[in-house]
Amino acid sequence: MSEQYGDDFITITDEDGTDYEMEVLDTIEYQGTTYLAVCDATISEDAEEVEYSLLKVSEENGEEFLVTIDDEDELTAVDALFDEHWQQLEDEEASGETDE
Image 1 (cartoon, helix red, strand yellow):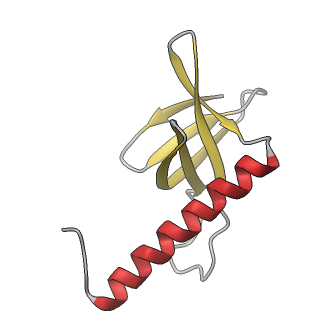
Image 2 (cartoon, rainbow, N blue to C red; image 1 turned 135 degrees about the horizontal axis):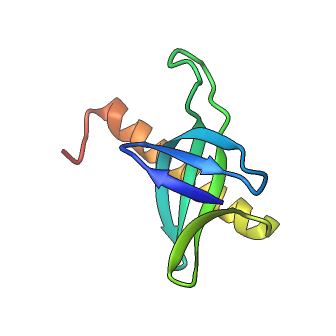
C-alpha cells in the first residue's frame, strides 16, 4: 500500500492498484507505533454514524506505508484507545473546555 498525505485526506493504493480516497479522522501513538483512523472521503457530512478503519504506519527500507492490523488483541487495544480519546474530546467539547 502507498499513501499520499494531504491536509486530512490520503489516497491509499491497494495491492491491485485500486485507489481509495480516505479522510484521516485521527491519529494515535501506541507502543511506539502510529495508528490512523480513516473513513471513506466521499461520506456525507451529515451522516449520523461513520464507519471507520484502523491502519498502522509501518516502515520498510526507510519508506513508510499503511497496513491493516492483523492481530486481534492489538486491534482491540487500539480501537479502545481511539474510543477513549474521542469520548474525552466529546466530554471536553460538552463542558466548553478546549486545548486551543
